[in-house]
Image (tube, rainbow, N blue to C red; front, side, top):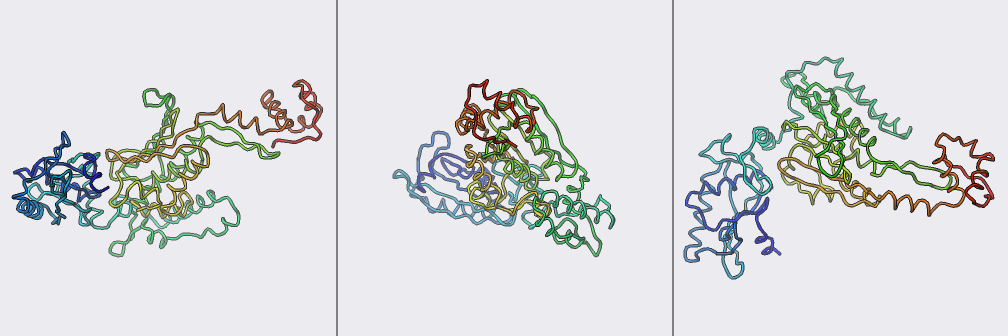
Length: 450
């Protein structure tokens, strides 16, 4: 299995070199890119264009390995210690240089300096890091978070802080359905916001953080959510578009309501009750949008996009996955918060659940709905989730019709003929008259759809 993965082709974590370049800078960019990302392997002795395994000169192979190790150690800052090994593939010997994810980011080529010499691995290619990515790497290397950094241009008072605490509690109550649970929601105070990173103390003075600015809609470059409804399966034809600004928690609710307005609604019959059912699991729709807001990169200037196509709901958020976070881990329930202050606030306001539970629950709810598994895509510095729609409405309606008894079928036919009909009218002779017109047997007892 290890050999198969090694020769499966170049990817985000694999790069081939037919030989060791005389100038080490030609592969040093990839070395620092792997260290700044999720790690990876450079394989010397495989042609990157033809994938032909040419192997290395075995007479000088150990000397070549020492030269690679020394070049990496001398050229990179902070120092990178590679794992250099030999591997036999199809009777040829190749050199495998494994670079582990680094903890002291950003890593860069010494001779080029931090700004010019920092690289990232994006979609299987090595690229110079963009300014916002460099800032994020610096914060990550220092175990700091953008949302917990002071927002010094914003001046606040104790009254402002109390007002945010009040709004957050009101939001938490609104998002809680059971009265018994509403009673358990505790007040939050200035100290609560300090512990969450929404406020910070610097030399005895209280400052708002970027999280505070985002939650109150006052960040200097406050992000928005862009929503679009498209005809077909691509972005060629807009049917409708909206943009939502303001506090980020309000943006989540507005984008969620937008999706509900655009997707289809059907119904299910449970005994005597009629229940409206959306074509997508609504809790999962809300979770997708909330996760995008809570986990996006706020250093990247782009906006979250919520797009509805004929076949899918697509939610795209700026920022590639963090170090040690993979799609496989996310599906299994692993989560690493990019914005812990916002995540704390959203958890209190009942906008998201505990970290790590969202993605597995979305997969489970889609399966319960009979939908395909969602698709998670990490690409070009952004992260996207596709939730696929079930366009078999005709089959669903036939299934519902087959499950109805004669009374329920009559009632549904009456509603379709006259949507304004009342329950009292259905309970009178009109029911029997309508049933007779449909040539159905007179029912033994009346049943209602509420």
